[in-house]
Amino acid sequence: MADEKQTKLDLNNLKAGGFIKERGKDLFTVRLRVPGGRMSVPRLKKIAEVAEKFGGEFVHLSVRQSIELININFRDFDAVVEELGEKSQKVASCGARVRVPVACGGCEYNPNGLVDTQKSALEVDEKLFGTPTGHHKFKVAFAGCPFDCPKSATNDIGFQGAIYPTLDKDACIGCGLCAKSCVPKAIAMGEDNKPVFSNDPCIWCGDCVKVCPTGAWSEAKRGYTVRIGGKWGRNPLVGTLFATFLPEDRAVEFIAAVLEWYKQKAEGLGRIRLGDTIIKEGPEELLNHLRSRFPENTVAETIAPQIIATQIGK
Image (cartoon, rainbow, N blue to C red; front, side, top):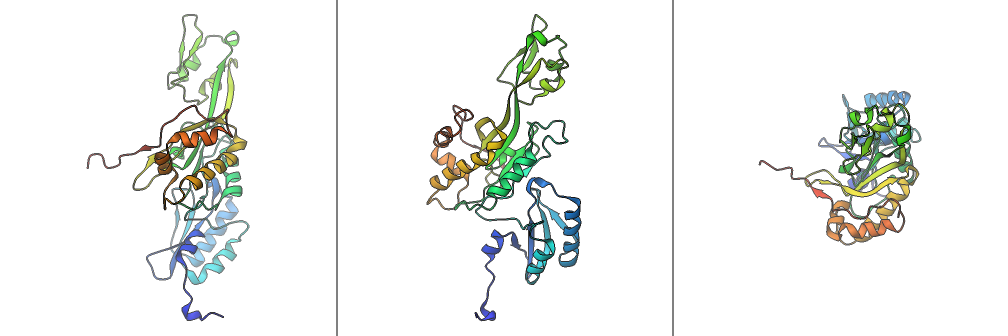
């Protein structure tokens, strides 16, 4: 048996398991896994009980929808995990691995939602959470519509619900509601008092389909717009468009393909994020990799992730 006096905590391993060292002696933050930001009321009550028993005066709600228990003594780790119940409330992950996905409410109750983001987030969490990248953290976000509340484009992979509209002119009564509701001005009324659609301004929000009283506007395609290479932090990037109308049930497969490329291309480059790897290799390299598996969804061309100059005006 090892001498207990020489036993040391491996802070890197603890962090990988969601236990993050605080400033205080022997104190840690325990980050809980809340995929998609959704939690049942009974679970929430149980977390409050555990936090009150072992933690400080408050919990912290992270910007990525996790709940963090503050001021947990490392000697209480086993008791905290046991009382939370490993099956019902797992500890999150940090380090160079796939993180817990974030998501908005999707289409279950939000009138703007176009896709079931909660289902997608849970599937990604179940199948890919904690997957080592070998290089750096890897964050995924799901937005149900172009309002993009989760700010999906600032994640390594960001999914955004989208509908491509099509018009049956014979069914159109020329009411003009579609043109009035189209904020990007992709629809205008023509001389024949029928809508004229312009593809370039369209952000695929589906508002024209929703407001049409006769069903003249309908969806030709529905799925995820996918932007890749975003990150926040000291040197933020905005991810750029790599795929359109990706079927909802192929999100996990798509992420796995991007991870495969990332692991290979970032080999030997140290701690480097996906977006910086794309900038180094060029976006066409990743496009070619994705095109072989998702030919109907991968865009013909794109640009590298874009640098956000946060120090403007300094």
